[in-house]
Image 1 (tube, helix red, strand yellow):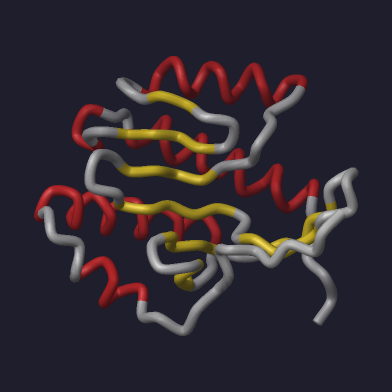
Image 2 (cartoon, helix red, strand yellow; image 1 turned 90 degrees about the horizontal axis):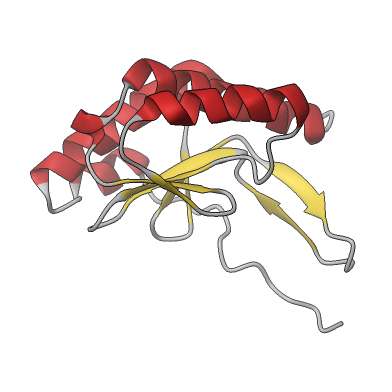
Amino acid sequence: MANKTAKTLPTAADVSAFIAAVPDERRRSEAGVIDTLLRRITGEAPSMWGPTIIGYGSYDYTYDSGHSGTSCRIGFSPRKAQLVVYLIPVFEGSDKAEADRLLDCLGPHSMGKSCLYIRRLDKIDLTALEQLLALSWRLMGERYPTRPA
């Protein structure tokens, strides 16, 4: 297998400046809300991952193929058409039932493999969203324990 270099790596870019530069006022406000939620849930200061993803924490992964890398444990991106929240890729067992319950309560959204897409945060149940984000953060910590410094 060819050695691939990850496209999305942490940068020194300023998260606050990135959020302040989001052109759409509503999307900029929504980004501030998500940032506040994730700071509270994770206890982590965010960092930019690539040019458009705001990430919290990090973890190392290795796929069955041998490909390995580092990514943020949870993050989001205030895109033009929608907010994209990056969650744990797979909820399993009782955690899947809990995630499904929260997604049912969430309001209008769509899901990709590890992405939650939200067009309008004002249509979303923020309590359900916060619980879903906290569940994802906890499960990522269990699946990918933090390395000792």
